[in-house]
Amino acid sequence: MSGARQDPASFRLPVDEIRRGFYTDAYFNRTKRILEQAGRGPRVLMQVFQKKKALLGGMDEALAVLRLCSGRESEAGWERGWESLEVRALFDGDSISPWETVMTIEGEYSLFAHLETVYLGSLARGTVIASNVRRAREAAAGKPILFFGARHDHFSVQRVDGYAASVAGIRDVSTDAQGDIWGSRGMGTIPHSLIAAFGGDTVRATAAFADLYHPQVDVIALVDFDNDCVGTSLAVARELGERLRGVRLDTAETLVDRSLQEEMGYFRPTGVEPELAFKVRQALDGEGFGHVKIIVSAGFDAERISRFEGAGAPVDAYGVGSSLLRGRNDFTADVVMVDGEACAKVGRSYRPNDRLEPVE
Image 1 (cartoon, rainbow, N blue to C red):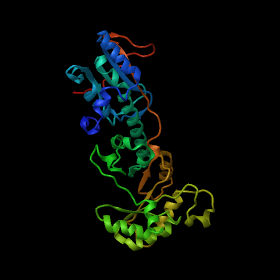
Image 2 (image 1 turned 90 degrees about the horizontal axis):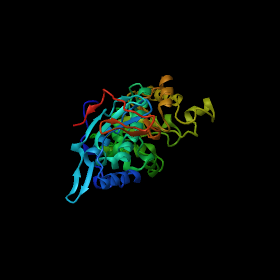
Image 3 (image 1 turned 30 degrees about the vertical axis):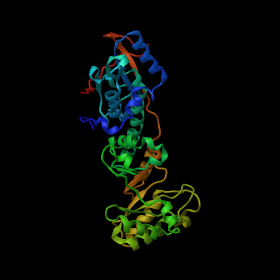
Image 4 (image 1 turned 45 degrees about the horizontal axis):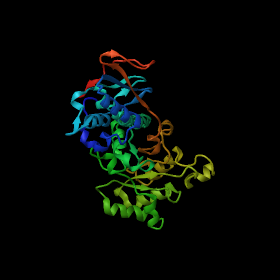
């Protein structure tokens, strides 16, 4: 995404609360007050980095925090500090190396001391998600990854999580909030609960979905309710015909699908496995339903996707959830220059990066 920055307003930051330090570690808030009370206004160069090979995410939100929330309180109200800062940064979607400087902030330290907790948190979460998504997309060899992470974390992070996923190339998200910043809408299949509400009848539930939403929404049948993905896929395809866009296999990891039990018994491959995808594809093609796509979900991550691709499994898309949200990409900010002179804790020093671009 190099070359473009996201509109700061799109992040809908709680500006007043960030300005007063509500989300900030107390010691940064106290540092700001000490400097202001002492009348000290050193001009510092703050350097931001992390320690892994990663895909950068969260930068545009971090810049929005600096742009909208730097400054100080005065008798006249909030005095903006952004215009007094010189900020250089990489772009969301840039590949980054361990210890590479991703951003520098230069200016009077008291104008942005209270923001360190917030902008580092934005970078940490955004980079975790962007990096995880990139690994999953690389494993999928060009096949779509469906971002199903919403239910695995607090709802308040959906907007920025979805944006971080989009930085890494995701185009299909499950909630409107996940797509809000970059202009997409939530998509998805029917849930097991809808099938249960139709008395466990997957065909009736999927037909009801199609009657209401087709053709505006792709009809994807969830076919593991009876632990018979082959039989249920065929039953739904026979009923819906061309209206059926795809089937989703979501077998629990403790079960062996009925179509595999005679061959494999009640042991691995439990859950969704390449063998099951082959069985469903063969059955659909055998009755002329070659247009029906196969989507797999339930516990997928980059390694599992790689295994499916290595086996040549006839999968058209992967639904991936919590694995895209997990991990660590901690960022650190250090003052490395004060009033034009080197000044940093032992072990840290200024590391210029020619890739940084000025943020206007």
